[in-house]
Image (tube, rainbow, N blue to C red):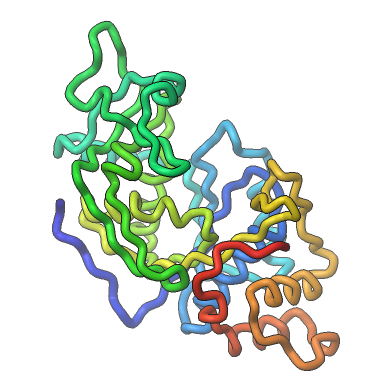
Amino acid sequence: MRKRRFLPDAVYRGRFAPSPTGSLHFGSLVAAVGSYLDAKHNNGIWLVRIEDLDTPRTVMGAADDILRTLEAYGLHWDETIIYQSQRTAAYQAAFEHLRIDNILYPCACSRKEIADSALHHGDELVYPGTCRNGLPQGKTTRAWRVRVNDARINFTDGLQGNIVQNLASGIGDFVVKRADGLFAYQLAVVVDDAAQGITHVVRGADLLHSTTRQIYLQRLMGFATPAYSHLPIAVNAQGEKLSKQTLATPVDTNNPVAALLRALAFLRQEMPADPGDYDLDSVLSWAIAHWNKDRLNGIMQIPA
């Protein structure tokens, strides 16, 4: 592993990184508000990154719609937006560094083959290492995986506490370049967080399971590890995460104050005494001054 570069303690740089697969719904608004308030309460910089890496799932016009919605809610970013779809060269460079170090290997397994042969760790499928020592005869490369060996990742999440995972038994060697030629989310997000100097990641608890893989890649590439805090996710009456797949409705840009107050209530924040007297700027100023993420310690999901 490369020697790690450490981030300066005095600078807070946070980010919100939506995928443009649809309009901003309440669950994604909660993540945006939580990351924004944490950054601004700590006198930090707040960035927006459009994670449009997965082009087959990207909806035309969704990125612009998300940005307009953030602006309607007074959530203004501090630096130029970056788009993952424009950063293929950076991901390729990181991929080549790992490949030259013999950390990666080609994999010929199809999804069906993996499902048939994978080990199980709870609800996770654990790749059994079929191609670890070379492609089976007659097979060709589909994807590229990173060797995890016996890596044990331990980190303290700002809300969820101490998290420990042995990658070999919990996940197995994972994909960094997909069969369709696209770079995997885990690699791209690590490269982007390092490039933008991100010191704090505040995001939904649905991404908690990805963090150990990202920390592992950070260590392999010599990147500093940000401080992580995973907010509870908003779920519907069936306990499903609000998303495009569960038909979550877009947030209303015509009445942002009401939705912002609802997001603050969801995040269990102290509320203004007379919220009806507040305009958007006043609500945000109040929320920044009174932000206390410790009210959410240990909570993984909350009904919306």
